[in-house]
Length: 215
Image (cartoon, rainbow, N blue to C red; front, top):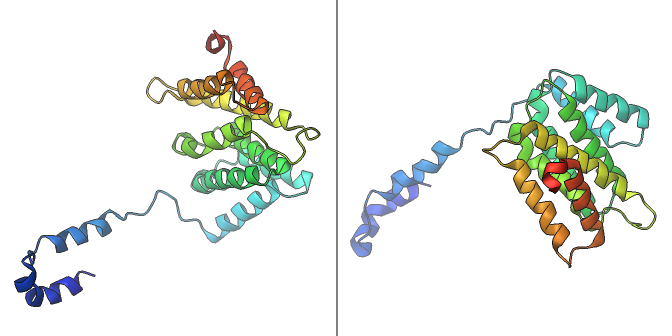
């Protein structure tokens, strides 16, 4: 793209009066910033493993799900796949909340728990995706197609325990994770217009955060 303005510059400078050479260098700046994201390239074996694990975690076979979750919770070599797992969970929740697919939301929250249970993984860099996903499963107005029948309350309780664990493990005076989550729950709780399902999730979330937060 830089070659085009330069070739036209001599012909257009006289009539335009803006034929300075300052803009082309600016055009060079963005490409210099296009550094690869901190997403590690996966080997073929890792790609196959990731595909197998994610498909099993959201698949219909309970035995395969349990095995896959156990692998996520214990495998010390998952660090390079963590960005992909995080995005998989985040996008999965976003899509399945819209579709009110309670089962898949439960499976995705189990993946979050498995990641948190793995002592070799450092999740701090991915909390910006994981926390909203978990919070969605706590305070969304509707999580299933049949709210009067399906037990979405159990999912809200489970996700509330997860977010409390996130606060316990990662909240600091610098990132104020617990403070921000508490404000979100409190705002939903005290708002008269809040749906009762969301209010339940907010109360469950505050309860899991402990007595000090409730006070």
